Image (cartoon, rainbow, N blue to C red; front, side, top):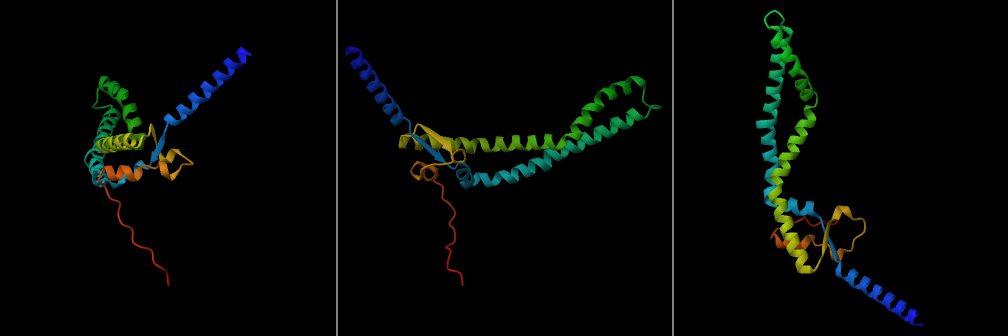
Length: 179
């Protein structure tokens, strides 16, 4: 009988601990892309990235092609180019060919890195606001809306974060009755 009482007490403690633990975990979500899109500095990033492509990426590709063409012509000119120089160029040409062949991937990676660099302060600003809002509202975890399939509207903190950042959504024109 004593063992039964101890077992019942243990079960009660486990159930109570699980309920307390479940109550301590509170999960919220937000649409971070919407918040990022409302920050005025975000609109400038596209033009900065375009400028980066024109001023840096396109220039690098042009230089890469010119260097390749120069070295390739020097390599092919066996009359004016000494064998030792041609041997050195032969070692360099595969690197040029690789870069030219894979330029789109190299270009896309450089653009993505530049976008991340430019967006970092904006993401930091949003994440600071998310931390403040989640603490104010008692949430222990915040997830991106895109990661969820089912979610209660009450746990959406997007509006609270937008308010904390003092942003406003653009007004949508009222939809009237169609003739």
